[in-house]
Image (cartoon, rainbow, N blue to C red; front, side, top):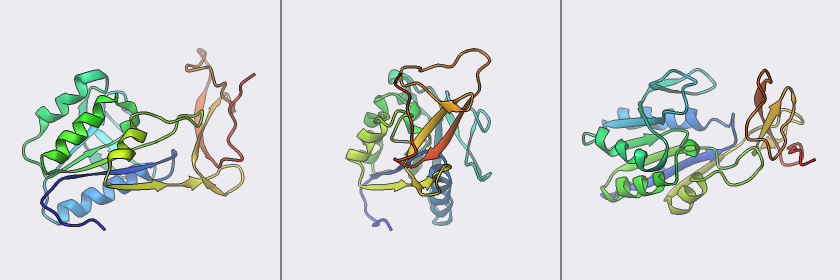
Length: 195
């Protein structure tokens, strides 16, 4: 799939929620280890769904990871945790600041294979930075799709629900006691309230 070169590169795995991004990331990490390559995995401090030092997929796969702060230039501390690893993986890139772009460029310039996964759209269907920027600079990009929970068609959108109803576009937070959930939806079934 990827050429064997002496230079580094950036791979981006993107798509909506429930499309298998982290599952694909873990698959690539396993293959890198089989090939005898050393691996370093990072996750943002904001995401602790699978434990503080673990990335995980919805199908139950896990991989140990180093937690790094996701705001501002704190993402550069990722470089301090490296010890010559050839493959650097970063999960949930959408939770990092735009400084992640510079970190990935620096790692690739250093001859490393950089694998980044994260959703490229917000629940509003808008670009979720910094993932679109990473897509633009990457040598390899895979955009995965899920299955729409409404109609069964290929899904490319993240549907945010508050108490089972589509979230309002202007509401970044939820009220105390409200239940927030997400679904994968196709373009036609995706709804964002703007009333």
